[in-house]
Image (tube, rainbow, N blue to C red; front, top):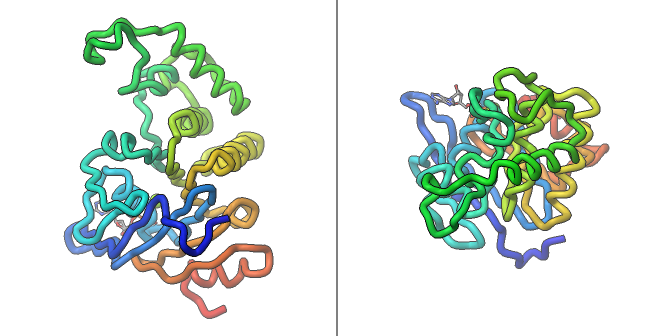
Length: 254
Ligand SMILES: Nc1ncnc2c1ncn2[C@@H]1O[C@H](COP(=O)(O)OP(=O)(O)O)[C@@H](O)[C@H]1O
Ligand SMILES: [Mg+2]
C-alpha cells in the first residue's frame, strides 16, 4: 500500500464548520490515499455528511483547508470539485426526479456534437448516452423499469444504484460514498461493495460512510471516527477491534 512518505491524494486540515450556533466540525483533519478505502464513521449528527459536503464543494469551510495531491484547493461548487477529481454519492440522493436515469447520469456532461459549440448548443447523442448508462447499470444488476422513465418513479434502491453507477463511471481520483447501501437490499448491497473494490483497484481513494460494521471490516483499509464534530480516533479495522471501534463511535469506554 502507501508508504509513509506518500502524499495523500486528498487531505483536510483544521476543518471548522458552523451552522449558526451548531459547531458541526471541530478542527477535523483526515488523509485519503490512492488505492485505499477509508471508512468515515460516527453516530448520527457526528458531522460525517457535513465534512463530505465541505470536501465536495457544497459547503464552504469556515476555517481549515483542503488539499489535493498536496496542493491547497478552493472548491467553490460541486462542479469545481468534480473537475478536481472528486466524485460524490450523496446521502440525500442527488438525482433529479423529473429526469430519466440517462439524463441523471450525464447531467452537466452530456455527450454532444459538435464539440466546439458550448454544451447547451450541442446536439445530444441520446442513443449513445442511453447505451453507456445502460451498460453501467447492467453491471450493477439492478432492475430498472425503463431508462427513459423519470427517476421519481423508482425505489430508493434503484435510485441509489444509479447514483453509485454514475460515480464509478466518472471517478478519477477520489470517490465519496455517503451511506451508499442504506436503502439497498442484500443483493444490491453486494454489487455496490464489489464496485467499491473495483474503484479501489483502479487506484481511486474511496471514502465510505456506513453504519454497517461488516462492510467496514470487509472493505476498509483505515477508519476515521467522528463524534460530535470532532475526530476521536483512527484505526485499521479488523474482526478483532470492532468493539473498540463501536466504543469510539458511541463514546463509551471499551
Ligand atoms: N444545512 C444544515 N443546517 C444546519 N445544521 C446542519 C446542517 N447540516 C447539518 N447540520 C447539523 O450539523 C450536525 C452534523 O450533521 P451531519 O453532518 O448531517 O451528521 P452525520 O452525517 O454524521 O449524521 C448536526 O447537528 C446537524 O443537525
Ligand atoms: Mg449523514
